[in-house]
Length: 371
Image (cartoon, rainbow, N blue to C red):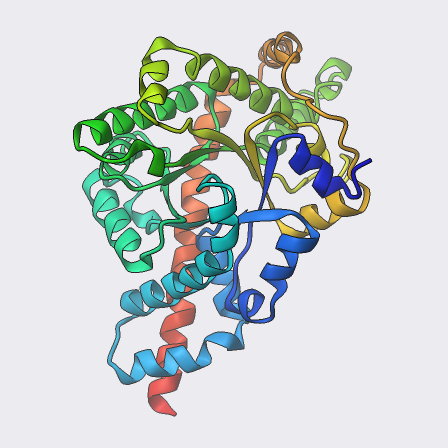
């Protein structure tokens, strides 16, 4: 019998990544502790996480003073501070990276979200971040915007591992997989070792329920209310079906034979927003072989405390999941409208958080210069 729910989750084929990073978490030993006690094998960051870390962290004071003394502007300071955290986290996870042959032990850092509609700008910054971190277990996060798709291909073609983020729709997910395969095909032409390139596709879950449930409440019928809390899981489960189908094609088999690694689905936004729903819903109900679940600490601890892992809860659910999306359509909930809105809102939130991060660091730099 498996000793803990997180160990059971790992044994069922789910890689547990923490959706959080701060210098204090690294220096206190908290991150290393989660590897041994919670089966955590990776970390994801985003502009919101860095903004919170910088706003609440005294751990950055010494570096801010050094950057101020060197005359660094705010953009340079943010670049140095965030990449330093990622470098240290990569080193913490180096043993996991080695033990899993590069599959896990990964740390993600996102390109400046203000570049999300700028293909070439995204490519340039992705390469700059990769070179700066200088660790093979880093993943560069690129949003799955229309402009981001060719950037994903180009960065992978350069031999850089990528975390594609902010995926909400099944259609966009198919485009992401295609962009990944194009990148792998180009990487092969460029002479890169395909076995060294890894990628995950971050499919967002709870935000889908939050938006759709709001619309179901507005409809107000019993049939509408009966669908609450079901869309996020259905959407994600159908994404896994897309994953299975896409990586069973002849196109992929050719690349796999050349040493390529499949792009794994990653469940993101797995913290439950509706208190009426179980707090481990987006963990225990999305168990499938070869997926990543990146969890905020609250969700991770809830899973460790009382998560009931019953094996694969995804494959075999596709007919039922498709029926849920059809039922939503009959209630007047427009799927495309919802996912388009969520992508736009997600990008806006990251830009706002980036602005808060710049403001926090700017204030700190000015304070250091005046001290």
